Amino acid sequence: MEPFEIIIEYWPKLLDGALITLKLTFLCTLAAAIISPCLALFRVNASPIAQAPLRLYISFIRGTPILAQLFLIYYGSGQFRPLLQEWGLWSFFRDPFNCALLTFILNTTAYQTEILRGGIMGVNLGEIEAGKALGMNKMRILQRIVFPHAYRIAWPALGNEIILMMKASALASVVTIFDILGRTRQIFSRTFDFSIYLWAAILYICITAIFVLIWRQAELRLNKHILPSDHLISADDSFQSTTVKRLRDE
Image (cartoon, rainbow, N blue to C red; front, side, top):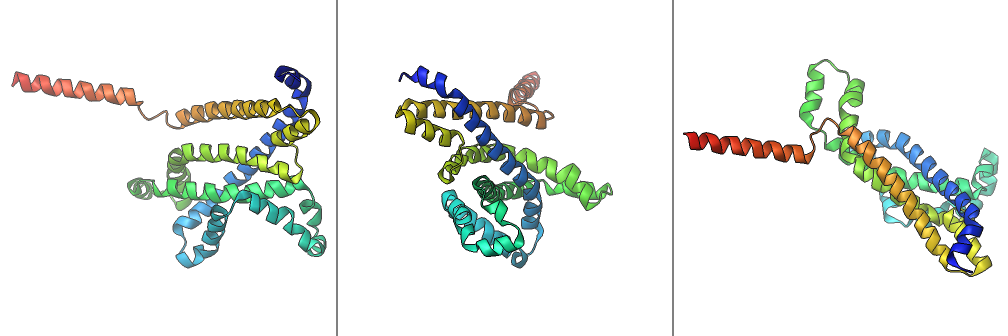
């Protein structure tokens, strides 16, 4: 089968897989975006002893492969079936999609927490002191000063994390979820045409390119109050030329 023939015949299945991939990525990123700011604040402000469980969780997530984490939740939950049934949670854990989603949420939350922690620590202390001098309470300082600046600092790294999460979602196909890679493997098992993997790769590239474009536009909007580098260069050149002219006049 020709490469274009296979994509014409099976593009609805790949599109269906792309929707599953986008759904997984969106849900896990949204959940992590809600949880990680609180955890990042805790990492910055809590005592080392209070941080110990959180640091252990983050170290475990960062130190183990995401595939191993997926297997621990998907296959490991079956070992606790009577207990999960007693708690009414077995209907959740017996669904492969839910197990994959929970794994990805736990994984990306750990990374987003550390990214935001770096952003919060990068906020100028002078601005926080200025907020206190204006009579702002702690919540208002977080809303108006800390988090806006922290997200501007962390925005590129957060975008990279989302892209990595989208590509890591391909591991969900291992537990019988028909995302892009799952559909690709299904089509290949029927046709034995290796070009379907090329089309899957192109689909991932297209999704990533669109996301990067949107994310950069959002970054520009966040930093619209900052002069572009070319304006800074022209201003610096103007300052230098004015200085040289004054020296010559003297």
